[in-house]
Length: 154
Image 1 (tube, rainbow, N blue to C red):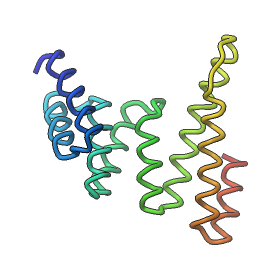
Image 2 (tube, rainbow, N blue to C red; image 1 turned 45 degrees about the vertical axis):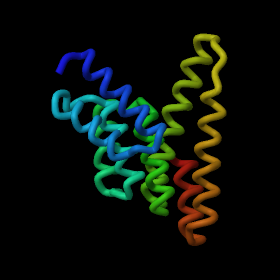
Image 3 (tube, one colour; image 1 turned 60 degrees about the horizontal axis):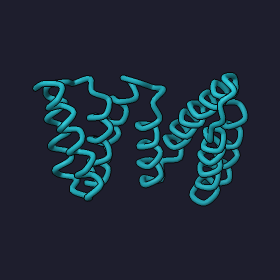
């Protein structure tokens, strides 16, 4: 498969996800992965598709593979946040939320150092706020306390 075909399949997978045709998107992502197993976007698209097909374990595996390929790209972490929210997995949500907030905070400070305006600081706070609110609504008092301590200590 040529790089042009890979790009074409990834574009078609993204469009299939937008149309909520998750089976087609998964098929296209897997096609790319059969030729290029280390394709970050194909793993993310597979994770999105599998999540929406209620194949949660496989979705997590796809997202984690993407993270192993590029842990500073927020897409797979965002997918894990969505997965863990849907599964009401507070410990997984904490891990993914903190990683995502860390990415956004680094981007913010890198951007600040370069004197360029950015909205990554806001994204960082939104992710943390979303996590804390989720912990408050779904977790026990102990989990809520631990979630707040985890955010303070990292």
